[in-house]
Image (tube, rainbow, N blue to C red; front, side, top):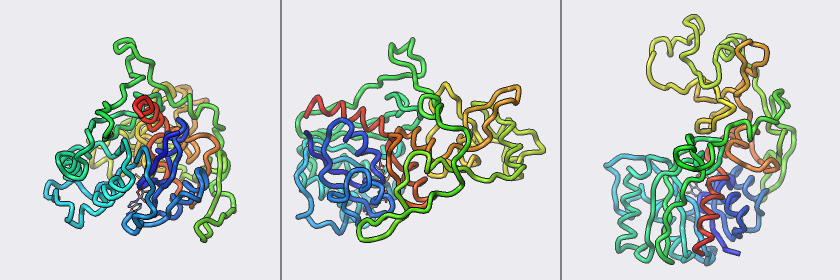
Amino acid sequence: MHSMIDLFAGCGGMTSGFASEGFDPQLAIEFDLHAAATYAANFGEDHTLYGDIATVKASAIPKADVVIGGPPCQGFSNLGSKDLNDPRNQLWREYLRVVKKANPKVFVIENVDRFMKSTEFQLLLAEADGGSLKNYQLSFGHLNAADFGVAQRRKRTIVIGSRIGKIELPHATHARNPEIAGLKKWVGTRSRIGRIPEKTTSTSLPESTVEVFGQVVPGTFKGLDIHLGRTPTPLSLERYDHIPPGGGRFDLPDHLLPRCWREKPTGTTDVMGRMRWTLPSHTIRTEFFKPEKGSYLHPQWDAAGKHRVNRPITHYEAARLQDFPEDFLWCGTKIQIAKQIGNAVPVGLARAIAQHLKQYL
Ligand SMILES: C[S@@+](CC[C@H](N)C(=O)[O-])C[C@H]1O[C@@H](n2cnc3c(N)ncnc32)[C@H](O)[C@@H]1O
């Protein structure tokens, strides 16, 4: 079994994928109480370090085969400094400090797609080029979760650093047009949310709390507990009803357009979008429960108007599109759980990376 450390672990999307491939988590660091509680509920409180990575003592960092997780980017300004002592680069300094102590064979950094244009990325390249990562060879690029069988399009930067010989990024297993690439076809939303009841369970979480890290937090919730609906206004419902699968705000008749959109007829094309059953969803962000923020309307909609599900996806559906297992446990309020789901690495993408690394370890 390969040991691993997850930094900036969130609720554990990345760990979930690695653990399903037999990796053994030894330490996870996360400073958001509810995300850390969710992580602990699923993978064990014993190795979950709830706190700021900067406060973690060197003695608390074990050796590990693999370190995963990427420091959140502070910004993408070219004015940022490549100096590790610049306070803006503190999270990177912390990341490198853990890598140095854990001495992994391989580390994996996941980050937003713009990451490769950031100063933080330049800093990383500089560290591998004679700096503290000089023993590691880097591979990097963009991976789309949908290309690995996840029912969601989500493009992320992945960096693999290895001191056991260069490890290229994994190759796609799925494609939008498989007949061209000779791969499997992209997986549609139906495969993950097609069997979830159209009717939501409730508008609020069950009343339940759990004690973790000596504190009481809402949880744990599972499955249909987080199949939460909202109470849209009649106007919102009328809007949703006009939007077919693959459509969006441009399908709204003039009289239903909110003023801001009427005055801004171009740009932000995926807002108020409706998913399709046969294609992966667009990226699930932290506010997936607000249709005006993206393409989050439930995919069920027929032209005849007989069978339409006029609501955004629920927390449970979002978690399934992020490839979390059905019985994954959640802690926190509705907003906090949504943040954990939207911030996560899709479990299926993490699993594909873990599977790939196993061949080398
Ligand atoms: C993008 S999320 C990680 C998602 C995670 N990899 C997953 O797959 O679920 C980044 C996380 O870093 C945490 N974080 C940010 N700064 C931190 C710090 N200084 N110490 C510990 N955790 C931190 C945030 O609370 C957030 O949960």
